[in-house]
Length: 273
Image (cartoon, rainbow, N blue to C red; front, side, top):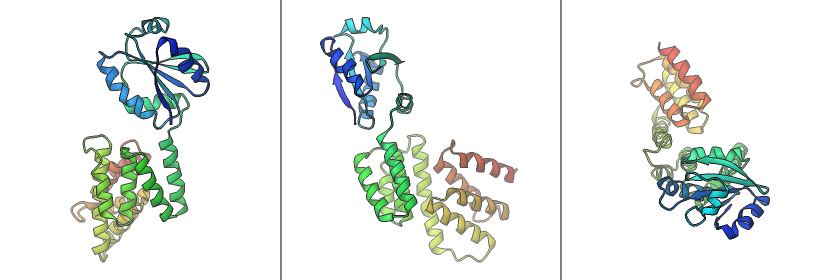
């Protein structure tokens, strides 16, 4: 976890330059009257809870000499201090994704990303009790991270705990891209549970759909996509085009940039046309 300090001319050397020998210092030159500054402020403050850096805020109207020394011509102007030296950062507003990329360029690692790596390791061990405990811990620590909410919802869904999964999905803004679409895709996975519970296979199409549904629920999306693609090839009309629709659900869940989405979207197009 980082820190947040309000810096003035008399405190600049100690709060910024000296502190930069301990950890990077992100210097936010701002003004109270600046709209983009007020939008950037909460994003930077939020990220100090996840990354190891000090956020030093400098009001240029109260500290014009600092603005002059560091050639601040427009705000917000964000600079970086490392080991006593100050480097240019960016001028203007960045969204959260862009800010995370900026911090990554400073070789700063997100505690959240490290926690997700721990989750992946536990998931690989197959210890479901430990995995559930870790999700509970992280949901308390990062209650508003949509990616964590999605991951946890899929975990609870796989365990058959539908109410817990739905409660987590309800916390995701349906208009927030891409998470809103992914949340809807997770809701669609619930239909697969119903299929598994009620479908008694008596055809090749039934077998393919059932295998795809089981794989999707288990998080084995490549196998799920492969089975649903085989279903498209086997019987396009099965359950009102269920093979293609199921693939689209998994595409939405994975996101357009995921390698599996790109690979199987191309395969689906080749099959259809």
